[in-house]
Image (cartoon, rainbow, N blue to C red; front, side):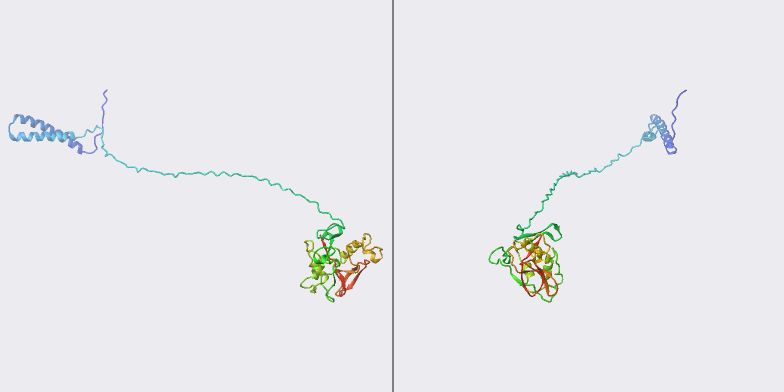
Length: 301
């Protein structure tokens, strides 16, 4: 069998009409041409070429329905804008952290506390006369001012201790009644206080409080028991509670350059009397504040 290509005719009738008309004109042109050859008339000479020309014009314009459709597409020129993407130059800074480990070695040097012996020089240029054996709330040692202390130096022309009345007779000084070792500093502070103290100048507590000796200014008038400890050292008494057993110990004054008369303490007995001690024999008694007694400052540390 033979294979026959079949193609679809156009759905519209316009193309078929043109095709038939073109064929008709071609046939007519052929007939006219033959007629022209046989006729010498002028009209046939003019008409025949026109008919042939029309046939040749219409016939090629008929599109073969089986020929592939050729679509002429106007070239589309698409202008694509050149996209220029500017990527900023990224500068990456890498920070290198250097960790320096410093090892601090703390060396704690514990210095052994200075141990003083009774009878040796103290930090303030005086003499150590009492050792509590261990540190107490007030300190451990008691130091007595040197001979000649009243002018702020040791020795000189003032080797005799100054004398003064205790002060403020018939007036009670609140807080100045401490008698134990370690209370003399507070007694002195209370006596010399601007408010509530004794305003009289030149009294024993003020002489001691105003002293600067050996570069130190923490001197004060000793309390009753501190004065007794000082008396015991002055007599070299290591056995009796009261210096020289209150005058019957058979001991003699040996140390410190003291007078043999009585010395004032900072311990107030009442509004009119304060405690003192006789350095001639060691006897303690409360004496009237109006009397004049000797003064020797001490300090604790």
